[in-house]
Length: 391
Ligand SMILES: NC(=O)c1ccc[n+]([C@@H]2O[C@H](COP(=O)([O-])OP(=O)(O)OC[C@H]3O[C@@H](n4cnc5c(N)ncnc54)[C@H](OP(=O)(O)O)[C@@H]3O)[C@@H](O)[C@H]2O)c1
Image (cartoon, rainbow, N blue to C red; front, side):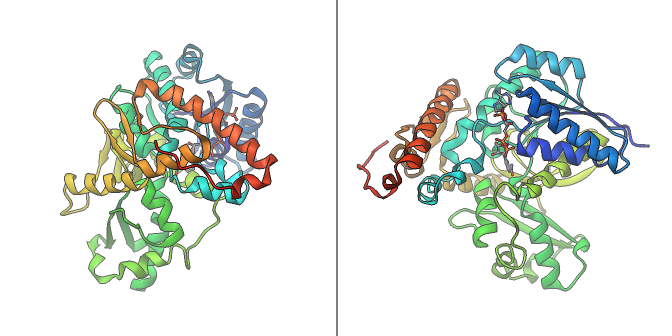
């Protein structure tokens, strides 16, 4: 008999709404609450999930509440009132896809920065949410979608890391599993994947089929036995942008939502599972992770040491534009990607203490809004040469 419990989704945007929908349309007897800052949008998203799950015969209860994460007291009250067992954070000041809504030349220029320099936009809502979780005295398992590979180690210093992330390392696992099954000529369900990789690698793999300058660790198991040596890695991964290419952009967040559900459903229903997740227990990058009622554990493949796994994730972190996250949560950025934001937005930052992150987020937000305005109103802007900028 499954012990059914309560989940709170905080952040009523694209991913939060998709995941709420998935939670409402699976299992039975789940109590779900969506928390957003826009009352009308939050009500509509909660009703959509409630009514469509009712339509398909599911017996889950969905409700909604309004809170702005910057109001820690109100969010803490919202958490105390509902007493969730699992909290899923999906709030962000600027989701990864926002730059893709710019005209192509501007998007291409900003894309060169990779993801690391945008860290404050993901870190700040999570930091505020975690302050509310602590203020509520909640012992919920906290799962976060917003750049967990870097947000969690940065917040760990302040004791504010969520327990585990979702997506990123997980998003290519079904494609890798399918490609391995094809090459071995076996049923896909006989294959297990054990993958250690940073966000940078996950993002790149589905586009190019390789990890570039970053390291990753990948093991393929057939009926539990390691068969990695029987497979040509380049051929295996080539299927990600090839045979198993998938819809990208915001529509492609179906895959992220599925990765989130692979973590949230076992936690919510008190089941055991081995999944892939970024930022487990405050770590850098992504890992295989075991979930069970007794806790969350990182599962290293046989023969792989902690040091090897950590080194692979740190190499991905550097490629993503983050040189280092120190034990006190200070983030040092790689000069070249940071230089892209300096050149394009006029935002200069190569090092950020945790107590500076909110000002950094505010500045990026303001500068990005001005940049958007410029590139939309002055079509020639993108083609004019830039002054050389140092950061
Ligand atoms: N791990 C992965 O594989 C993966 C994949 C995709 C996305 N993501 C990440 O997941 C996060 C969410 O993505 P998304 O596409 O769902 O973004 P989105 O559609 O922009 O949703 C973000 C939501 O956060 C809300 N928000 C912002 N500040 C808030 C505050 N102070 N209080 C309450 N809510 C606040 C926004 O509210 P308003 O609507 O009122 O502005 C918006 O609804 C991003 O960090 C994104 O990069 C991760």
